[in-house]
Image 1: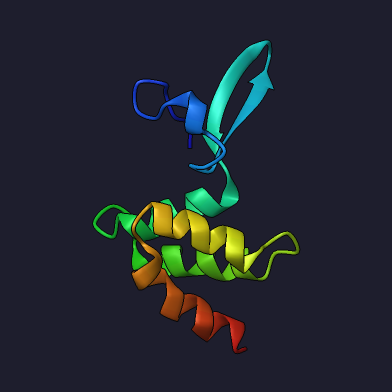
Image 2: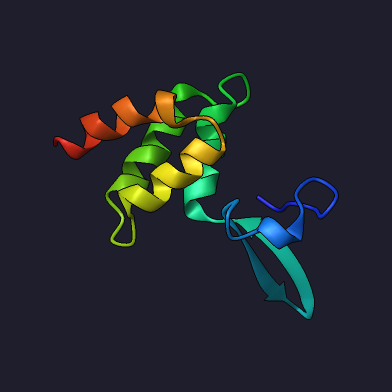
Length: 93
């Protein structure tokens, strides 16, 4: 998902899970994998729960997934209370 400076201040990109990628000489600000999954879970009216849970399952099983980093971002986005039980259930498998 691409984001614009008018929505999120670039000075806080790392804290907000946003990365800059250069594509054909243009800098694009896109959300990282953790932020993307959290955004899918934050908007249940726009994204089905099945898709959001599948994205979370894939993220939890990814080799670069780190619970503390994910939890810190989830707390920053005020979604940790909703996401924590889901992660615990997925990690028990």
